Image (cartoon, rainbow, N blue to C red; front, side):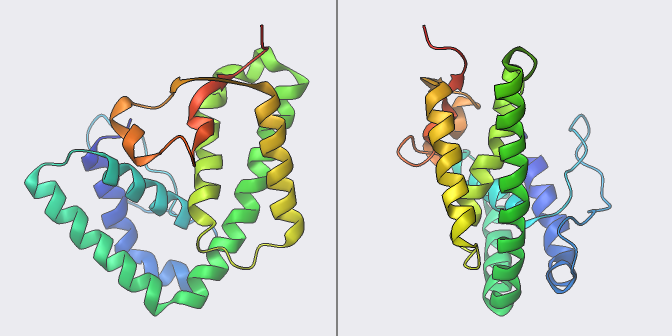
Length: 191
């Protein structure tokens, strides 16, 4: 799990370039900053990445200092979302499309060769989480893509084995089973 400092650094770097990102035609935007020592390289800036970092930070027990930083960043992002609502919705819809097809590709690769892909689930499922997080802003998603996601969820349910929360336990409260059921188990052959 990324540390609070990692997610806060991602959001801080993102806030600094968010307006330029929203005004661009690019879906993925390089942050150009280094993560905290020992952390993996930051992913490119996307609204899904922002939403995922926000959701993780809401789930964590933050220090007083980090909580203050988080609240400030959350307010800045919320203001930017309102100021650039149409651009935000367009970008969210575009990202929803891209992540949907990446998620579909993973599930198809898994079905074709389960043994080679089963260990990727805990990482790849972050795409499904981002789809959920983007759905509240992605108002221009075609009906066919909504149906595709429903079909992919049906496929996932057919290979899903319910179990414990697959990410760090500290995050579970921020990702309730009722909405994020796919984080509570694994994929594989049912016995």
